[in-house]
Amino acid sequence: MIEIKSKREIELIKEACKIVALVHKAIEEQIKPGITTGELDRIAERVIKENGGIPAQKGYPSYHKDVPAFPSAICASVNDEVIHGIPSDRVHLKEGDVVSVDLVALKNGYNGDAARTFIVGKGSKEAEKLVEITKKAFFEGIKYAKPGYRIGDISHAIGEYVEKNGFSVVKEFQGHGIGRGMHEDPGIPNYGKAGRGPRIEAGMTLAIEPMVIEGKPDILELDDGWTIVTEDRKSFSTL
Image (cartoon, rainbow, N blue to C red):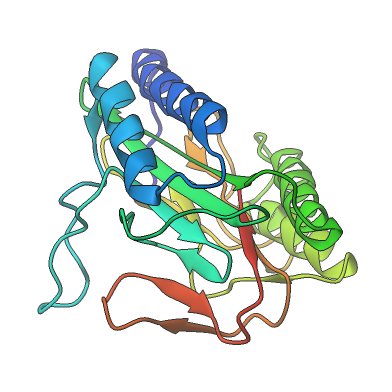
């Protein structure tokens, strides 16, 4: 069921989102060759807590019964890792790495959620184009996040823009509603037909998340039960 938020609830979600923005700013300032994704995770958790928030992803339960809960404040997915990359002090970032950082901060009972993709140092032209197309796809989708349009209008705009620029979208994962729950209705795929799906109304709160792959859209799950990678080992970007 899609929840329509009150003005007060929207303000509380904005407060959580401000923390998320501060974390991404801190990571942007610190990310460089040699730093580990574990260090980035500790930076994120510190910034979240200093601003009165809780790292909502930490302890999030797995869909698999035999897989432990997610252990970190951020998902740090490097190069061919699509989503849910687990930060580690064994992963030292190198010049040109493409790193997608996804995080959720909880404050006063409401969540804020956003991902950003960073290029470590100087990246290749292909990496720069991947990140730029992902960013532009996000804003193509945002054009339709207005009352009167439908969720399918957002999905179609993102998918069409990505594919006409020679990239692929992930079809197994999607954006979603956000609020008291980290993942609420409606689901927001990054592909689909315009004019389909729930009608957008004032008071809906949406986490629109383009997931763009440099190569083919096929993905695999690693043995850790969390990390998703591209089957052809091409790079990934999200926003």
